[in-house]
Length: 465
Ligand code: ASP
Image (cartoon, rainbow, N blue to C red):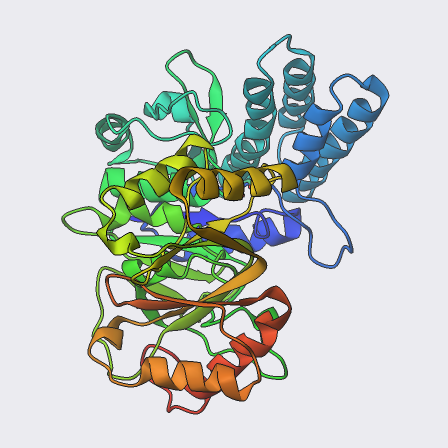
C-alpha cells in the first residue's frame, strides 16, 4: 500500500485538485491520501494560503468586521473548489457553519483557539477531496484523526504524537476498502481538542500514517520536481542539479533553507522503523517523472557531496579563557547559562582556550536577550566573550565525506577564492557534514562558489543528475 500526501499547492484550486485525482487514480495502491489546506493558487500574484487566512482570522478575533471579511474569503476558496469539482453544495454549507462556530467559540486559551481554526483548513480540504473522488467514481472516505485514534499532546501549535497512536492507526487503516482521505497537520488531544504540528506539518501526518500501516512507500507530492542539491535562489547565474537519491541522515543534516520542500522532522516516524519506509518527493503533475527518493542508506561515491544548504539569522558567542581545557565543569556551566535562558544551540566548535556557541535567532531573541546572554557568560565564566551577529551557516553534506580526502580543502579554497571570509567551521561528529559560518551578506557568493567547485565541476552521478 502507498501513502500519498498532497501539499497546499496541489490542493490550491479545483483545477490542481483534478490533477491530484488523476494521480490517485493511476495507481490502485494509493489507498491512503493525506492533504494540506489549499495553498497559493498558480497564476495568482500575492495569493494567500488558507492556513494563513485562518491565522489572520484568529488574530482578528476581536475585530469582527475584519475577521468576517477573511472568513468569507476562506469560504469562497472552498466554494470555488467544490463547484469546480461538482461536489454536493451541502458540504460548503457545512463548511461555512463550521467555520462560523469555530470563530465564535469562547475558547480562552489562545493557542488552542488558533489550532481549532488552523485545523479547519486541512479538514475541509480532505472532506472535499473525498467527496470529489466519490463523485468521480473512486470510492473514498474521509477519516478524521479522532476516528483513527491519532492522539497528540496538548502543546498547541507544536504538538507531538502519542506513540501509542501507531497501533490504533495501524488497526484502523491497514486494510482500507475505499481510498481514505485524511487531513494533515493536526491530531486530537486526549480531551478531544484539535492540536496542530509545526507549520508544514502535513508531511508529519503522512509519515505517521505510512509508519503505522507499514506502507511500501510514502509519496510526498508537491509542486516542484524533487529536491535540488541547493536552493535555486541561493545560486548566482547557475541552476542546481536535482538529487535522485539521498539518505534520511543526509536530509536531516541539510535541514536549513532550500531543503524545506519536505519537513525534515517528518522523516522521524519512518526512518526509525526496522524496515524504514522510503519517501518519494515528487511533482503531483508529473506521473512519469522520478522525483527524489529518501532512503535508509545509499552507496556513496568518494569525493562527492549530495547537497549544500544555507540559512541566515545566526549569532555566535566565543568565550576565550586561558586554561579553559583544564577547568572542570566549564562546558556544563556554559550550556546551563544558555538553557536557563530557554535557548537551544546549533553548534559548538572549540579550541584549547576558547569555545564558541552558535545560536539560531528566533523572534524571541531580542537585542536585550543578546546582551544579557553575553553578560551572563562573562560574569559567570570569566574570560572574554566576543559576539558575532548576522551570520549565515552553510552546510555541506555527503555520505562519503568521512572517507574522502580533500573535500574540506576544496570547499575552503572555493570560499577563499570568492573573497569571502570564513567566520566559523564545524564538522559534524558523524563526519557526514561540514558547517561553515560566513557573514549573511556573503551567503549567495559563498554557496555559488561551493556549488561550482564541489558539484558543477564534477561528473553527474546516479544520485545527483
Ligand atoms: N497547511 C499547513 C501550513 O501551511 C500545514 C501544511 O501544509 O503542511 O503550514
